[in-house]
Length: 209
Image (cartoon, rainbow, N blue to C red; front, top):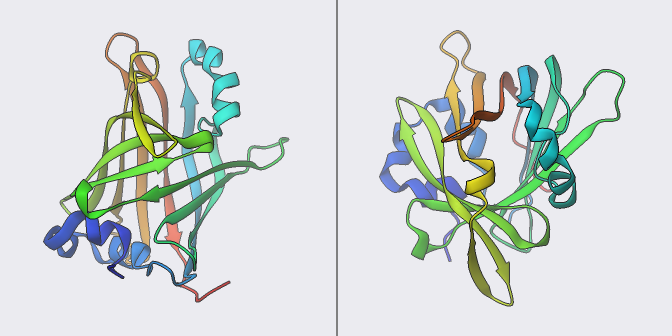
């Protein structure tokens, strides 16, 4: 059992090629109860008009942000649970005039996956993500969807409807404690489906909460 942070496990030696703020961001020890919060502003949260058809499913699985806006305040809470090796995320979007919207998920990695992690939302629905270090940034690329049930991982053809996702977090050269991020979900035929981007300040890592 390794006690390395989950993305260090996935990246191996490439972990050292990440920018300092990105490494500090994710230096959270499995089974520790470590906690980090980053706060920032989403410059844009956008989805294509037809993507409204997907929102009922997104709400069911807790996977899609249903609102749009600019300059949207956000905080993201990261936790390592004392009882497992996973990394838990709670993204809290503050759209004006609406209750805070939570997008919760967790990421898992095991030695058999190499540089791949799986991000799970509700009901065992997961997205396989290849992790890489590129010019100091951590980059995640969609490798397909799965459904985990009864110990099995069943491939799901959700990419036919949703498209392919990519996410990056990149050090901000103007400030050692800030980073930028962007997420893009793009369909090969229909173009951009979802996208958001923003800038964040990294708070201190805390012990068990």
